[in-house]
Length: 126
Image (cartoon, rainbow, N blue to C red; front, top):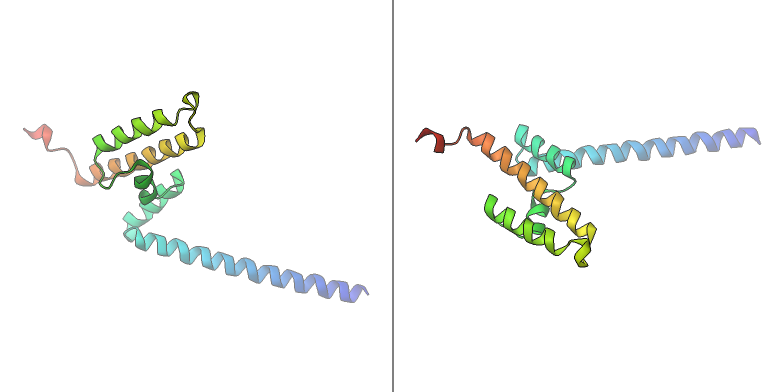
């Protein structure tokens, strides 16, 4: 009886081990694919890192704030409107308000990344 119980435990451990290894392999492949879609190399890795930090992709953040291009004025205008509309004291949703905030945070990160990539502003040179 103990022999069969030991065999069941060993087989169960092997099955769980294989499933865990397969899940790790799939997660690694998914992260590599996400980095390629984000631009590959260091730029892709930094974009994936920003996605993980905010919990939101750039595309999702653009959809939430209803912007097509990264224009700081438009982003701020849409953020202000959506943040006020979803205020809990006015009958809005705290969840939606937090999503709007996270979307603004993600777009701000992308705007900051673009300005550092472009170098110093040319406005100061005049």
